[in-house]
Length: 292
Image 1 (tube, helix red, strand yellow):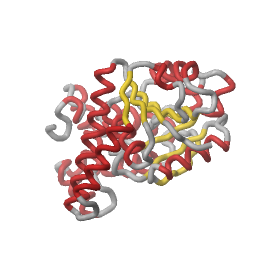
Image 2 (cartoon, rainbow, N blue to C red):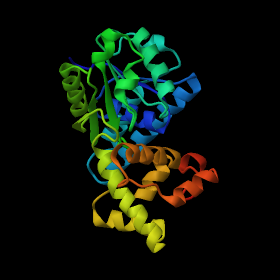
Image 3 (tube, rainbow, N blue to C red):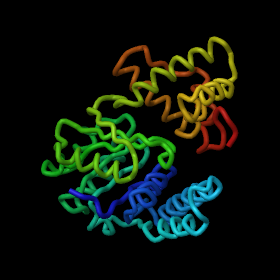
Image 4 (cartoon, rainbow, N blue to C red):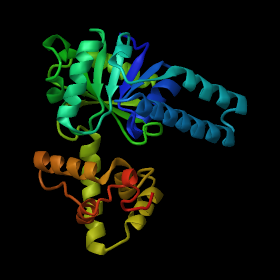
């Protein structure tokens, strides 16, 4: 199976980045859907803005001419389409759901996708921690083999890894088609079973727990920890920077799910809990460990 047209459900920062990757890297038309057209249009605008910023860097680094960069931005504009209706998903081959990490909300989306997308379409969730099998409970039995996880990492435009997550019901053909699509989008697919944390978050969660514990014990400024991680070359962003971008509430929820599933080697940062209690959730509220 080949993907000729895709859709993204949820036009927030993650959905916009995923749509940008599909249009800019895979060169495929993308329908961006949200609850209302204004939100969808805002997501499209963000995807175009990401492309413009990346194109400007290409020019500055002399990896593309000004004309080539402008052509790429225009091409992405042409490939993105905003909508508030599931009716515009009648001819898609792949849908990636990127709504907030709430199981009932995701199941509602998948029930709609089951009703409004062609039977051959792959139905993927970008969940970072929820069970793909549980999300698939919302679709008819005949569609369960087409449901899987495609977990992009923030920022999706820059991060190369995408987890391809198969539930017990996902067919091998669907997994292979999804992996092929990830490669078409110039990303590296990592296959994972449907278990809490999948692959990457289990690794990062363990590392973050150690860094959080060190920060609390040593009273080192979070910015110093982030600087050290970046300087090491291990990761492009430090754990506190990443937490702010993802959302502190989401980071804590994932940490607790990992802790419940895999034991106390996964911890929760006390300072993060204090910020959440104060309403500081990171970039989305304007303040977390950093001002935004």
